[in-house]
Length: 178
Image 1: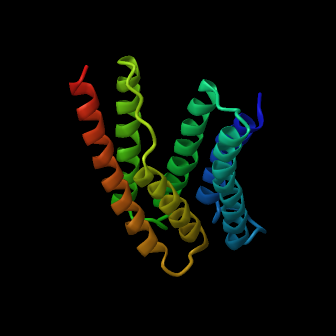
Image 2 (image 1 turned 120 degrees about the horizontal axis):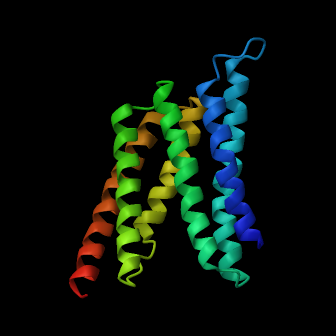
């Protein structure tokens, strides 16, 4: 297993811990909830940073693999989905915003699966990358209850919808050629 795959595996493993810390932040006797949010925020930040580094290392050290591409997408979805779900459960994030984000992620993952059956690869677009960065910042700000957290969440929603529409158009064009 190469370094990018280890980093993606770390993100996959950290997702349930971030979820656990967030959902149970108010439940631990003797540990103030703010500490639980700090730990969740730190673990999430480390996970978000590994997302950048696993791609950077894979491309620049020629360590791109099929399993790495699958692990990277799975890791991204798991850390983002678990975080938004937990934030919605504890009422730190708007439920509709989380629903829109989660629905887009499932829809595009499904389109990628269908397109792969036709040997049509849906590459990550710039809007898709911008969406991921916006989502990561929004999650971090929401976890920490920082100023502009809600604004960042709605910016992430807007980019999520835009990039989703972009992928739908790309998918339609690609499938129509088959």
